[in-house]
Image (cartoon, rainbow, N blue to C red; front, side, top):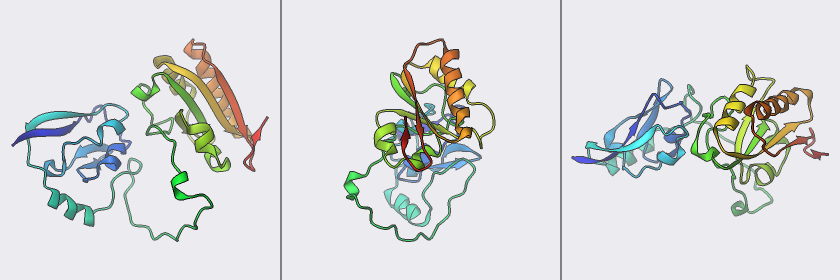
Length: 230
């Protein structure tokens, strides 16, 4: 039968795995670091995966394809691990300890993340979510050190994270490309008070200068005991 079904352009795919995680039918898997439609009859044609792709690698096409098989999908999802994760990793079952009940009500806790991926090395230089965006450039540790990080920093911003001490290379070139090629409204740099975080701040400042644009920016420093320093 001819029906609507997704199509993945492997040349555009950056291997982030966001589409595989978003597909509730298990139709998409990661093969050799690229997203792949595993079976036509697992794809319902609704396209939950489309908005999660940061590079626009997924589109709809009308073509000859097997009919969507809901029973086969349910049987597969019972035996298969949930897709997703970082490129090159393998899913496995983990026995977890019960999580203590938090003081807040569960409905009050929610992620403010607006896009995926977030790692500076993985994020594309051009993406729709960068247009007219308030950009957050944060050191990895800041989200763990500062308790209200989602509400005060991630909320209403596009988030980029990295660790200048552990990651190879300099972020300045990638950040320059992002700022230069997109309509960025503002830049907030959040770093830890430790010296190694100076590399992230320096790269962001050099990127702002190299972009040739006048964009409002600020630096926020978090202490190792989770406080904002003046």
